[in-house]
Length: 203
Image 1 (spheres, one colour):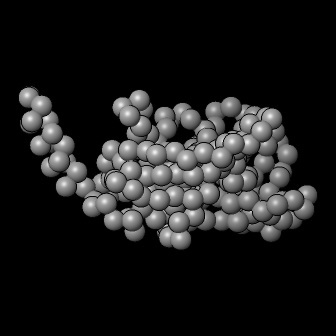
Image 2 (spheres, rainbow, N blue to C red; image 1 turned 180 degrees about the vertical axis):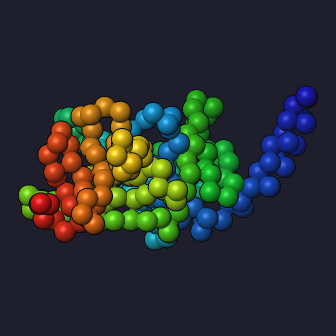
């Protein structure tokens, strides 16, 4: 295939995808990672131009903009010694329906999927009086996002115990465990109950 054909094909592919309309970028975008990866990270692009990081402790977005079919993300990079402001200009490689691919000068590609707004969400309270956390279930409930904090979001998979009860965790017993007991959603770790729907210890 000659270069002219490659360019024409690229144009046709881009035209088949969503037009570069700012409104189609609004929402939460979760980075596509290997199924075995337990962490969840991404970005949230808001209508007023603000941006937020999802599940990233050291990279904090605060605003975003579109310019010449590029996505500009502004924020702060947080290190051990200092915090540095940055402005990152990324190529919009493709935007089709709910999939966004960003890149930079051919160096790398990052694929994101839009997180549906209608996913089942459950708030849990700390049994020790700490902050609330959130569970977000996938549409088929095969996975759950466990948001301990905006910087700590875990992806847990559903498993069937020998007694037929579903739990969500990783194969490593040291990870968080999500289950339903006595009508309440619970989160425990290493056998210690940490969060419940009511915030109360269960009998």
